[in-house]
Image (spheres, rainbow, N blue to C red):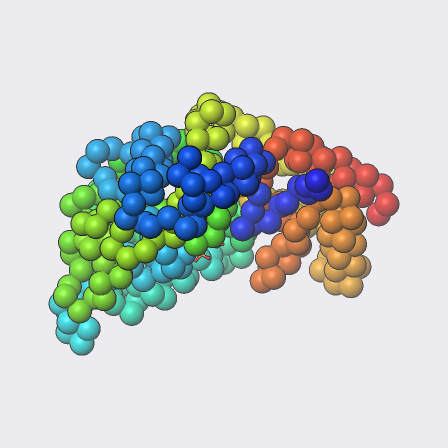
Length: 370
Ligand SMILES: Cc1ncc(COP(=O)(O)O)c(C=O)c1O
């Protein structure tokens, strides 16, 4: 069997024991005589799977009892719409008197959340790091008065920033996109009103989105909001209003079991700090590559790096050769996001320490050819 170290920002590596277990259970899950893909989502077998997955997520993240966990579809991108539709939408689509939403702009994902929120609410961009190509997290201003919620992108997958601390928003619920950092280190869920994450980075396969929401924030969607976009309906039906992404929920459960056996989020965080530390330390010392991100805003999960050469033909050639030669050495998907260029190593929980060591070794060798 061939396995590469996959540094993709998502979909990304899954732990090998999870893949092997899923393979072993493919045709007969838990003695049921069927694959999870064939099961009725209303069967006892599947209810046990979704129940176990939720219980593990609650345990690993320390989700308080007054929060609901929902398994939704549409990716994190649909939450850019669902959060405002449920927390800030006016009584009628054409009604005046829109509610206010505060948002901090830390890059493309924040902008997408802003674009959707501005369709239903009065949007206040309280701060932005656009002035320096989003390479830092700006200080968080207080929410605009009367805000329905305050939105942040906890970890920006593209530029590799992460909030250094949770902003103070008083009584205004904090909503955070934690797609690329969920379960990478402890997070105090009680400080947030809404958290959401597409699964395809740290949770499992693409197709399922985890939503964690404080109970009192459910039920605010006006009647014109479609059923599939309403938190109250999904919560009332226990994420079984319609057919959920059953197989994705099952694999998420396996990933969570794997993480628990690893020692939980604390253990993952320690490993993640070590992994990221190896790359950042290397970059600090390197004469050829550097991290463009301000130190206190650096992500543990996504680490962009660029050659020190001025932008131009020579730099483009180095980047192209780096990505191609790394792939040849079994280190794949190291190209930076198409909008920012350079290189990027995404090192989610499932990336083993050996993969990061192999990358650093590769970089050291590559430097010698420059
Ligand atoms: C921080 C962040 N938010 C949202 C998204 C969009 O997620 P999805 O493709 O699940 O809609 C991504 C995708 O990479 C992301 O990194």
